[in-house]
Length: 458
Image (cartoon, rainbow, N blue to C red; front, side, top):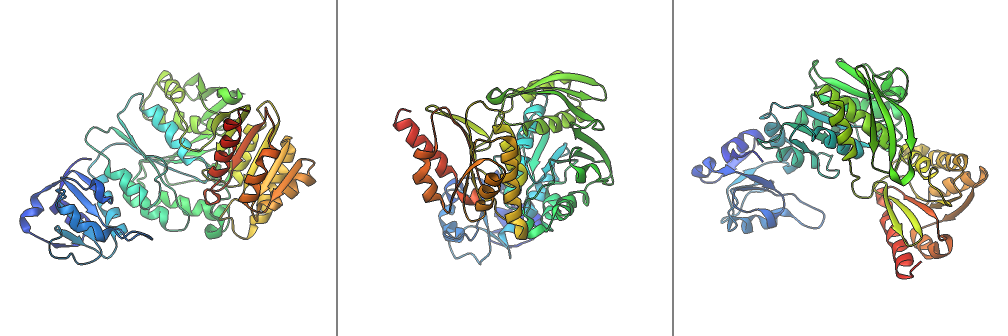
């Protein structure tokens, strides 16, 4: 992090300072909400959590050399100098926005309903071929994660890639005020967070708030195969990427190699070049095309872009391919909505062997949830998935629709019932997709499969 003075933090946050005036000239070299890392030079931010209240640890940070704390209550005697605020969340956002303003570098803001993290990792891999690249760690993309991301910016960074996730109106406006992107990248507008946003048009309106605070000299990089984005006309220059003929950066001659990744030709206004994505899943094509569009905009060569795409790595439980005994398991249980599940099923259909889809509920879909789950089941049947297994209250519609479409299907009301049946469901040589919303905790399903098939020697 690029250091700053405590006096600058007080001004940026706009809180009330309590403490020795001499401390205002001390340098802050890190910002943390974890008292265990609040060492010399740290600014400790106290948050009230469900189980732990950070305010209880302020006094202990004094002996570790922390400079000051940000607090929602008056500091007790013996605690460190403090910036007293009404909301620690708003305070950290204000500090991050100020810190971001200290850097005159390209900042790429990434949003969309599906594929944000994949797109962020792909763009980061490409830009790293030429620039010292700062990017979001993991999926820290909300009103708490984005400030921590921005506060990691330091003097050595030449470009920043920031993932921006929302679930309601107004959130993107607040994130954009912090991030101030010069390039806005949209992955896809899908059926996500419909409980709060209503419909896909509502999703676009909420995510489109990013354009309100962007300069007219900025760039919008939009998925041209998404009808809503194709027709989106922000008040700035735009580049369309996708596989359609009217896309500025276009994927052609796409060859799905299953576990071995995807080969394709990327065509743009100035020519074309070959690329290979070293990851499972057809959805990665769009991430690669978005990365190519951003790379071309920022002056990378075709060779640099191809090398960056080849350096891409998956993050966490996003289409992670595991070989468990005689099984091939695609662990994709970080999150799920109809768009991402359909993409995962399409990728599963390209694998050899009996294709089994273990699908849990997709959450936050609102009143249309049951119909959207049924649509996924119909799609699985159309693809010829050999066995569709639904688990959870909403997934009964997935299993039922798959069965009506001609697929073999099973349904389990809850996860314990599914876990108990896994040994009987799976066969040697199966290719198994495990996918559900994060709240379903389907990582337990993957762990159970590994226990059964590793310990048994299958």
